[in-house]
Length: 415
Image 1 (cartoon, one colour):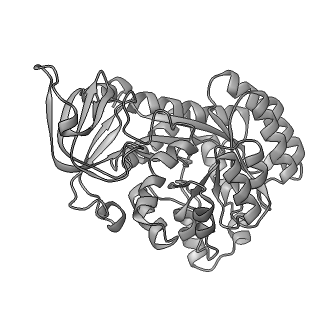
Image 2 (tube, helix red, strand yellow; image 1 turned 90 degrees about the vertical axis):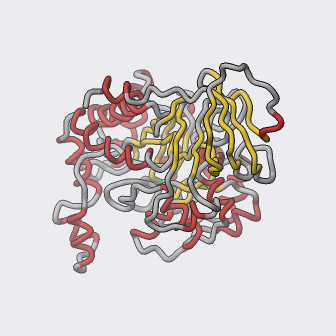
């Protein structure tokens, strides 16, 4: 299917008056309780009104009417942490680990992140696009209306560019807002073995400035960890991002407490992600900076982690918590944000409202999109989902059963 054919299939305007809706608590970012008889008025792809049906008054007589069938309505979902564009897959490594292979044995057999780097480098831009399409379609089918896609499997200017170009093209073709994050500091490429500092210099002095000048970068991320990059190298990347006016985020405290979250918060980071080993000092710094804690239960589950993120402490401090898939071929091969809602609740003990907030307005803040996404607000683009469920809790409750939904994305009816 060509890009033009895909775009043509999406041209169904959502303009008009939507009624017989049940609006979830906080869907507008204002109301503290659900609205049982709600209406949404869409004009030229934007929300003109949202609230109780009786509050809207008269609309022009030729206004298109949409019957919501008493469906529950949420803002469009947001997957704020993915590595969606890459070559190949790593199911064989998964099988090796199940058979008792250690991480070192998998790496010696050519596995690990470098296997994804190799497959990504070998793939053409068109091949990467074709591989990413079904992954994106799976997420969109569950009501995702905005998504972040990181690079980080190219680890050279040519191949990082290739990943980011594919991410941009996916957004254009599928009429979905995609935020691109440059994750050149994801791992050490094989040609830089033993020369981590030289590689970080290249990331900061060559790759990042070039890709930013080409308009391919919305934010900058670093994997700060004992098996990634140290605090000094992480800060070097943050400084380079600041000089270019780009926001930062960080893979932080996944395996150990490196202090990366406090460092990132000092640079006004949009988010700190994983954070299973987050300290109280990190929490305090994130609270001051308004940095979002992004929870990634898929990776926690897949890696059989046992160290829970400090949910109670984050909750007590008032640090916003988002939930994302962390879709990637090595540690979280999931393509269901709804499943992550259930996992965040069962594994991390999030409450239903917290989980739903985590994939709407908190996820929007984690991408710097809070003014346009994550809630249904007057003047905002029309991004909302109608769910055919009896109780909104079902979105968090079901495992494997995807509730039927009708998606309005960027002012268009998707299905």
